Length: 247
Image (cartoon, rainbow, N blue to C red):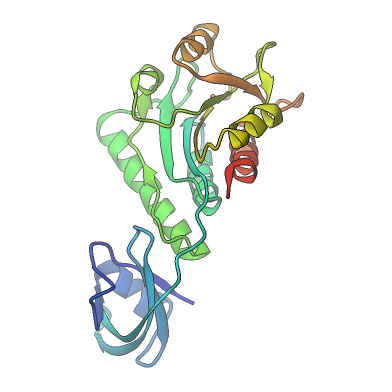
């Protein structure tokens, strides 16, 4: 079933919903929805309704009525993915799949060994594109809470942020890294429902970056003996964390 994104609306008091702009054009031109068809609408804040199209205006507007509130999705662990921007189009793939896996926030990072360098308008354009990818992933997989994709920031800035989850896990290739399974089992036993996962670039974190992260309270974790690509490490870490911390 097609889904439209309509933020800032109180679904509980609305008897009709009007969808306009790009969301309406996609529904009417691409999906070819017509009067009488059923469509879902979500607000990006965890709420969704289903309704029937009762009117259209060209290809720029559609109106839904007979609104039926949809039950909330079961709660999942709130995961923040802080990841060094990989080269090529891999960041877009990471955003897409991370959203599909339930990540609530994505922080693109510029580390010492990050090949991609973004600033100014380039960073803004990339961030806008990644947020569009996140929205499309929400629409595709039925996620009603739209994750935040932040503007690229430096590794140093990330380590200075105090408002991020208290459970901070760095996927690390260092001899003293703890097995991820053991650390996540401890986190589950302690009742953690939020976590930050820190993933490095193709050339790994530098020794100075590892030291700085540990000083900032990040726990180095091993994903096993196999050296993984950036995107593979991200997906494995997110899946393992969801498995361990979900209710």
